[in-house]
Structures are given as C-alpha cells and as structure tokens.
Length: 338
Image (cartoon, rainbow, N blue to C red; front, side, top):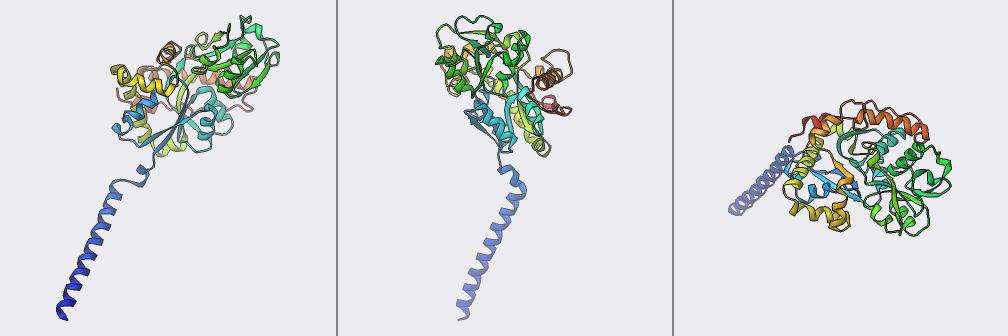
C-alpha cells in the first residue's frame, strides 16, 4: 500500500512539474514575443503600377527579412481601400496625396510616411474620335470615379482650359466601370489610370487628350497610415518603409525574378506592363528625402499639399479646409537604410 501510494505520488509530482514547466515556458515565450507581434500590420493596395511592387515585397519575404509582421490586402476597387483605411479596417493604405487630403477634410486622421511614385502619364483623360483637346469636352458626357484621383485631374484640366464642371455632363462611375463604359461608347470621354487606360483605349479612334505627364507632381502616390498606428508602432512602420526600398533594390538587381510577379499582379501582358514604366516615376530614397522638404514646385510634397487643399476647397471636393500641419511625417524616409 505504501509502495503504491509512493509511486502514485511520484507520478503526480512529475505531472505537476511538467505542467509548471510548460506554463513557465509559455510565460517565457510570451515575455520574449509580445502578443502585439502576432497581429500583422494590415496594408492595402490596388491597381496602380507604382503599387504593384508591394506584391514583390510580400511574395519574396522582404517584410520578414526586415523583422516586421505585415500583410498586404488587395482591393479591386481603389475607393474601397480608402474607405477601409478610414474605417480602421486597415492600418496603412496605398493612395494618392489628393485623396488623402480629401479624407482628412472628411475627418480622417492620417499621416504620409512614404512616397512610392508620382504619375507622369499613367493618369489620362481619354476622349472619343473627333475630340482633340480638353475644350472639346464642353457639352459632352465624361466619366470618372467621383472624388478620387482622376476626377481631380479632370477638374484641374477643365479649369486650365477655361471650363467649369457644369460645362460637361459628369458621369460618376467606379474606375473599371468608367473604362468599360467608355470602351462601349456610352460616354464621350473618361478619366482613368493605368492599367484601366489599356481597356479604355480599345475603343477605335480614341486617344488621350491630356495626361499627368503635363502635370508632373500633381498626382503623388503614397503609403498613408492612420496616425494612431504610427504613434503606437513606429518601429513597425520603419521596417515596412525599409522593406519597400529593399524591394526596389531587388527589382533593379533581379528583374528576371521580380518582373513576373509584377506582371501577374497587374493582370496585363508583359509588354503592356513595360509600357507603363514611363508613365510612373518611382521615387528613390534620396528623392523621397528631398520631396518631403518645403519647395516651390509640385514635386515638393508640402507645396503640393497646399496647392491641392486650395483646389479641393475651390471646386467643392472638400467642404471644409483641412488641417494638414502634421500630414507629412518624414521620419521614416529620413531614417531608412539604403
């Protein structure tokens, strides 16, 4: 009886020690790796040539290489990604400067942490045969995605041509739907960006009557984060920015590996994708650092921000003048590693 009790007690003791050891190991692991690390940083992106490199970042494991837990989330609709960021369903998003300022005017609290590129031709106003210049759009039906980047470009070029927004019949459609409507002959002109330009230009006789090439710096493409995320996770944001520049280096060093990823994400042919290159000017780390500084051209983000605020208020895309005093956070490009 004593022997049985002794063995049972020893087994019980061993089990308790094993349990305590397991709990201790779990506690040690928890202390070494905070729970927050298990939650990935959620980053949105959509169809734009300057944002396709994010697919390389993720597929080639460059987030992990920089020590950050981040996950890219693809959006078929660009506006959906903006809404997701504003609703707190994303931590960061790939979006333009003017759309970011519009969101701030609507109450969003955002910061720009990186400039991916600026558009030098891939945003286009495409018109039907017989319409040769912007002034010819008077009295015509023109489609674009309301309140977003190419609506902004449309209003800008109308103003430059001496026209008002009331001089055209504006047809608000999601960008892909706008391109399809134009290709089908349902509207006379359309404001779209690559790769949707390819679809729009399938309409016989159509051509771009003006593009972002004539307005360098007017459309900047950025990584934008909710301010609370930047404040709480600056180390993670820094590693994401570092991963972006590592991606650009990899694309330059090994196009044989990276080009197929870019082409697959774009959904167009390799030849079509390569044709987008001239229309999107990717910004280097040195250019990022320069562009975050004050200047007197649209390539300076502080200058461009002020100009965009003035324009959005003037044309009514922003009902109130947004406070952009802390919109641009140059910390991460300043500290980024080559």
